[in-house]
Image (cartoon, rainbow over all chains, first blue to last red; front, side, top):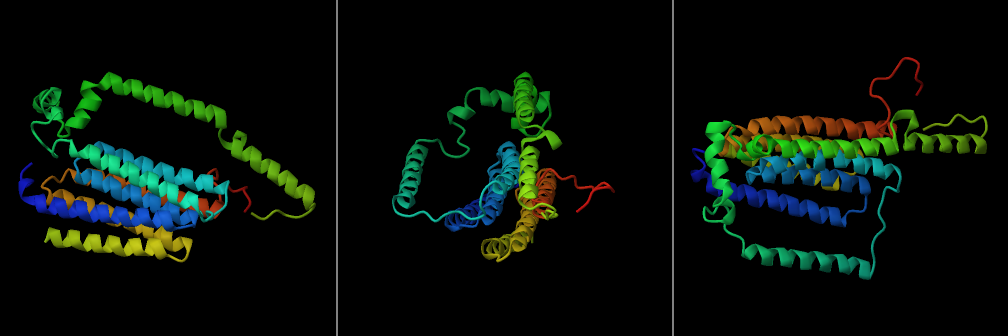
Length: 209
Length: 95
């Protein structure tokens, strides 16, 4: 942890920079109508916010955000775009105002709730006074992993994490059983039907995709 | 010195962001996302040294892997309009 104390100004500057980048991206996502551009920008948003989580020392959250937000959900959004149009309709009238009001109200509530929170890194906060101190003191001699969160998740609560992995595996397996893979998948069946309709409407014509 | 490098990466990220926002074609946006990911990785590495904890390098290596896979997935989507096409084609396939 040496050198950490002298770099507070740098951390503050970095947080402000990353948050302003996130702000610009969020405004752009709300204003754009091209769905593909929105998918690309949401990937950037996830990547930048993952970097911000690293700057805030939440490395495990950053891992999840980078792999789920920037990786998997970009691919899922692109797959969903196959089934719909490429541009969004412009909202008019009340549908343009109500989401803004909801967002402002939620933001105001979150800011109001954050007033009561203890300061960042406060040694007297509830998280740092009960069992957290025990973990911080024991992790280094017992497990010798530099990241305490990793030590808690993978070692102290190893059985809990194993159970979670089992649950996620069962959920993924159920999705695969429902949707299928390869030639038997739902998408392949739909495309096969499309091709039959095409050849019936245009007999002899080579379908060019 | 490292601070100047971090500043340069932030400026590069801003430039890539402008390209991703205004990019007229889809390929401009894909390229902007990919190189912005690279700049984020470099910024993470530099950030680790600035904060005095070079452990961040491991995280940036993982980000590099995710960035690469995501770019391949997007480009494959453009080429085939589907994710269900294998990347390596067998000799008998047409198209």
